[in-house]
Image (spheres, helix red, strand yellow):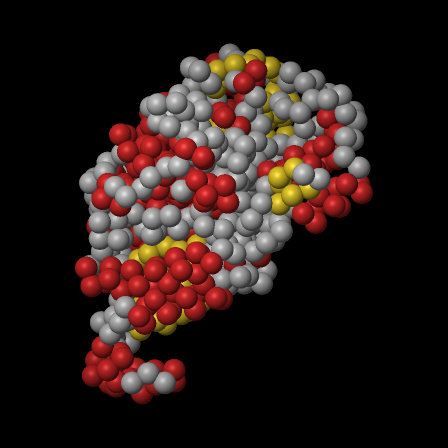
Amino acid sequence: MGKSYTSYGDRGFSQFLRRAFNRHLGYNEEDFDKPIIGICNTFSEINRCHAHIGPLIEAIKRGVIMAGGLPLEFPTISLGEINTSPTTMLYRNLAAMDTEEMIRAQPIDGVVLMGGCDKVTPAQLMGAASADIPAILFTGGPMANGEYEGRTLGACSDCRYFWQEYRGGSVSEEELIKINEALAPTAGHCMVMGSASTMAVCSEALGLMLPGAAAIPATHNKRLAAAQETGKQIVEAVRQGLKPSKLLTRRSFENAIRLLMAVGGSSNAVIHLTAIAGRLGIELPIRLFDELSRTTPFLANLRPAGTYQMEDLFRAGGAPAVLKELAPLLHLEELTITGRTIGESLQSVTISETYRDIIRPYGDPLHQEGGIAILHGNLAPNGAVIKTKAASRSLLSHRGKAVVFTSVSDLEARINDPELQVAPEDILVLQNAGPVGAPGMPEAGMLPIPEKLLKQGVRDMVRISDARMSGTAFGTVVLHVTPEAAVGGMIALVRTGDEIELDVERRSLQLLVSEEELARRRSEWTPLKITGRGYTRLYQEHVLQADKGCDFDFLLPDEPEHK
Ligand code: FES
């Protein structure tokens, strides 16, 4: 059973034992000669985005059996965004290691990655890329739209929006409770184009998920049908030897980045795609994201940057419909897990004119450029990210005085202090919230607007940090400032009252302080002393910066392959 052996110093004995012990499921001798398909089961009641995946796994198994394979599910870590402290990003690499090592350790020929919530999908793709046996991703799918008083609700853009309105005094406590009840109405992951939806559609562009699977709502019959197809396809992929290293190339990542820009996807995808590519030695320089964003039309009218949500995208044709429009910009010869090229898969895709407000034509986009810009300057020598289409246009070119918070806890302690000296035109700066500093680079980058300004009607300000923000968040928020404060990045040297200039058109982020003064501050700066134990210590000692994907240095391949 399987091509591997348990190390007893006797391979024949290893196989003998496996056959004896694996009769526990009632399988016969000849069953173990079939392609053995592992299914990474990330079910968890604590991770609500995966709580419904049992029937989907059963459907995947049916598909595997129909195609002549033998399914064996096994558990891997499940990361739910909302309930995990201090942030799921701290554990993405742990989940990737779990996934990789379990795939490697089990006697399996191919694997179905059952993903969904934000960090699970990238972790699984990182692990599968390193394990490099035929792998296919399937997700739990997005929730159906929420609704309150005739208004469509989206988790969790509206969680943030209505919380802010409540703090600003325009929504009552009573209303807030009713909205809270309606925000996440069904099983599934967040239904706006947040990180979960973004990584799911990008997986289609990478060729690792069946075409159209990403947008099917979690509770739709078609998701069960797609699960069954996924089970069938992984058996075929094993027969054809379609390993991740055959499908994931520099060109397939460029396809995924094009799609990311065209759907106004999550800023987190910049980190995740870089990390997945890094596992195969493929470098995605951060400037590539900007280059492709500038030359990719913004086509999908999806929240938080647009109007609609995932169930609307599903009706309009899902990711294949967006890819069809993008076809002139794609590498259509890239192979996918179906055994066909992406171009061949797109041949049969048609787009109904009924849904043209959801997916714009290539020649008539919502915006000429994609949804994410990469900034550089003395404040971010190795780059920073801004989700331009979820920002206020009036703030994209802005000069203001910094109001600095030195950590997430400092922010929590002072942001709503009535004595805080802050004006609407100031720039809120958060330090020490990066991968090493926080640690784990939490989603604190959408700093709350100070309560006293909210009550004056202020709803957006320029905010800058070395943190991330949720893919569902919005505002003029500059994220992933690299290098981060904790490793001596320039952001560590910003002081309250300093002038900062943001110019998105020029892709520039400058701290307007003299070289002499900065040198003086640097001489006083002391590096973060890493204390503590266990996984968090391992994380802080080995995590790479955001422009390198925040993977661990020891998880990259020894020999980069420049594909
Ligand atoms: Fe799981 Fe949003 S909380 S995707």
